[in-house]
Image (cartoon, rainbow, N blue to C red; front, side, top):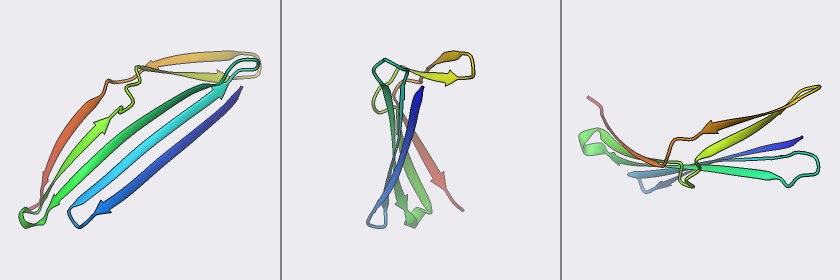
Length: 100
């Protein structure tokens, strides 16, 4: 079994008020004599800072690519096991923080 995991986490600040962050995970595995299986996940987070009120608003967008499930393969000395996990659907979360 060949298995690769790639993770990307990139942040960008636009001016002093907005920060964007994107996170991706890419999993690839291949059993002997089969085509590779590839799965990619992506999340996005936007934060707007409001300094006058000492607060910020964050928008989190999860599961941007709309994956329903994820399967994983584990290899031991004398067996191969495949597990399947259900993934939460696409979501938008809004969070408001206030400091005092």
